[in-house]
Image (cartoon, helix red, strand yellow):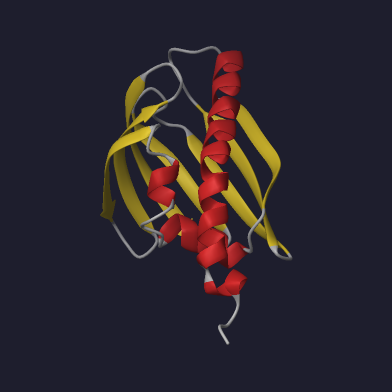
Length: 154
């Protein structure tokens, strides 16, 4: 197992807006990852857990991924990769309110039979940076329309 962490990301939106973007939005968030995710299928297992099956372009081509996501809103999301080159890997995403912003810290234990620990770390940090870059413009558009940001209409 290779330990990888990505701490200190701050999103320019309140915590509840970030969670609505990730869990409820059907307009902006799907577009954010349109070039890196395809054939996405989701199945709820419980109120807080689901299985995602998809193909991911991680910069080296498309790979199939099956993962279990457990989400405890508004604090944490745990991702367990079940199938694919990183099967057995686990990631924890911690979300913390910072006033009108949201801090995101990610802690991972990554497994791969194909990559060295240095390659795993490099690739995972690149994936986090790419996902962040994809999300930010769409989160901004979503936040501008969100009632918590927009405020009540007069």
